[in-house]
Image 1 (cartoon, rainbow, N blue to C red):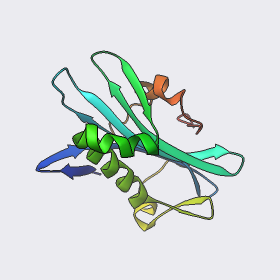
Image 2: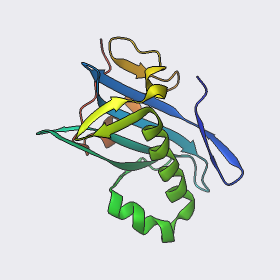
Image 3: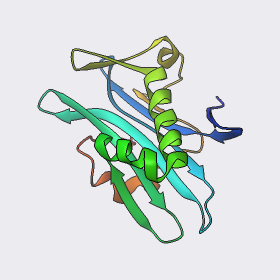
Length: 150
């Protein structure tokens, strides 16, 4: 499946991960790589079960060249609109793509019709180039849990 978002006149390919348990989504992540003046930056959006009956989400950026990992909450994303509109709009696009495949009603996350079309193995869908190891350091800042082994 070819995943992408368009920002201005540039199309960015996406990678994604969605895990489910008993027909409920437990975690969803979408990422893309954006070229920068000092090297590529990985931008991502995530949402998932955070424990205690609550779901939570946010955004992140990883400066690959300098190995700088930043967690970005929803308030910080709003502030980013003025300081870095380009990254802000890509992060918004990633979250919109996440909600294209996932829906939430009364704190219960389920797959949309588009999400149901994703081929999953034992409740986990991972796009061809998604690198879970790449997210190890930044995922320590999240309250959602991920599972990659079956």
